[in-house]
Length: 87
Image 1 (cartoon, one colour):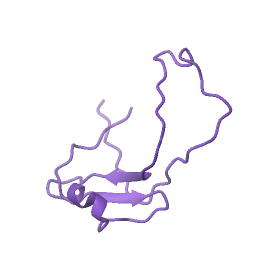
Image 2: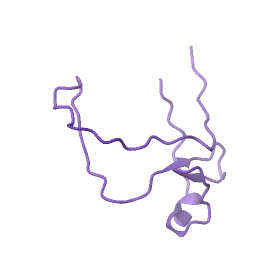
Image 3: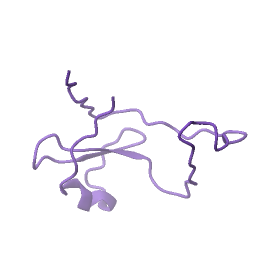
Image 4: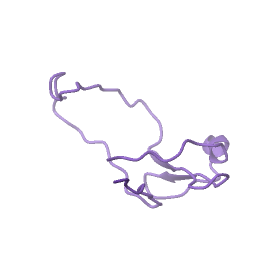
């Protein structure tokens, strides 16, 4: 049976970083674990267009849509891959 893709639209609550006393060791998960340090940046979601030629939307951590933000101006009208389906 084929499942229909899930479509999300803004606003979506983003996960926040959490402090921890220690990180799990390499054997914590069967597939292993990987870590990366977050030096600086922005936490945001990119909503891709569901139709060819549609506009992509960028939502900040606080729920604001930042379509005119200069840092993402080149992304908003660029063709993006189809939405990812999770099972």
